[in-house]
Each structure stands twice: as structure tokens, then as C-alpha cells.
Image (cartoon, rainbow, N blue to C red; front, side, top):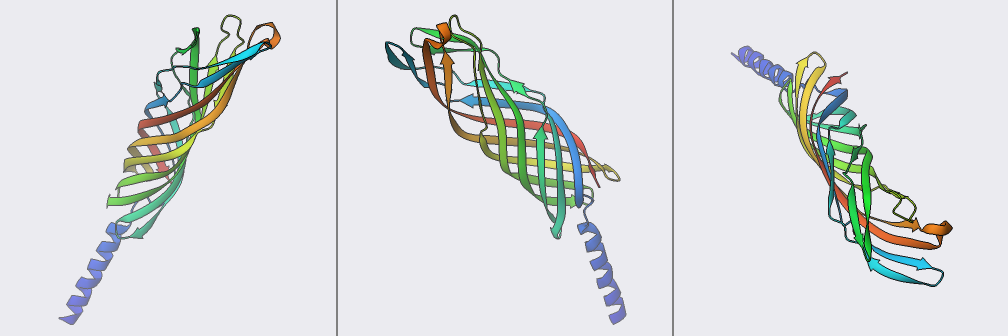
Length: 238
């Protein structure tokens, strides 16, 4: 009787270990696409115009702008078991395609600038992924970590004003939720949604006017931004 109980206990332990062994443990690489939307806020800025005879000040008015499209996100990471069905992963990804707003206007005292545009590019995320193995070949996970991107503002020549541009690198965080399922040995599919928020970034935009800079406009910008992505993709667990 004791021998039967020992055999049954051993079988239970082996079965539990088999269930706990996830096919996603180890290094992985993946690629995804889907939909990305970026929203830029607080784009208005106080400005000062100076010339040889004096100066004037004002505040530009700009509505929030969006840049959306299809991204291409490449990621690498490593997942290891913690206890039972729980795993933890560390990963990083990079968005290879840029997104641009449509052309927009900025209203200032006495007129407006037109044809302005913002381009979002070079986004990368570094994150941790607490995960739960539904079974050996299925996994749900959360994402949380650091996010950074590049934001470039451009404005074409406006009458007697020269063209202007300004680049900032906002930093923030990423939060996400995802699901992975093994397709065949090593190859898996996944879907996830992510939200990214970036702190306001201060910078100064300088625009020189006609006659080799007879007057200069400086705007103290302090814009913020956020973004979300809905992704589907495939990966390989090495």
C-alpha cells in the first residue's frame, strides 16, 4: 500500500512539473505590425520676436495633433520560470517606421504659420513581462517599463521667414497586455496592446527672418505626448 502511495505521489509531481514547464522559457526574437496612434499635446508656446529696434512677445495657439499608421516593431528578450505557472521576462523592442502628422497651422499675433508637421521616430522600449502559463503552449503577460522616442518639428519657409526645425527626445513609460501561443516547435504567434506616455519636453525653437536674420523669433515649447499600439506578430523561441 505504501509503495502504491509513493508511486502515485511521484506521478503527481512529474505531472505537475510537466505542466509547469512552459515552451516559452528562454531567448526569443519577434516582429509585429498593426496600428499605432500618437497624440501630441500642449503645442502652443510663448514667443519673443526681436529686431534692431526692439521686441514683442505673444503666445502661439496650436490644437493637439495626431500621427497614426502601421508600425513595424522588432523585439528581443528572455523569459524564465519563477514558480508553478508563473514566469518573468525581460525584453526590448524598436519601432522601425516613423509616423507623421498632417500639415497644420499655428496661430500667432498678427498671422499664422502653415505647413507645420511633427514626425515621430526611433521609439524603443525596455520592459519586464510578468507572465502566466495557461498551459505549456499558451501564455498571457503584462508589460511595464521605460519608453523613449524622437519627435521632430518642421516648418517650411513662411513668406520672409526662413524654414525652421526642432528635435526633442521625450522619455516616459510603457504599459501593455499580451497573449502568446506556440504554433509549432519554437515558432509562436502573439497579440498585444500597449500604452505609452511621455513627460513634457522643454526646448527653444528659433526662426530667423528676412535680410539675413534682421529679426529673430524664439518660441519656448513644452510639448507632451502619448501613444498606443495594437499589434499582432510572430516570434521564435530559441
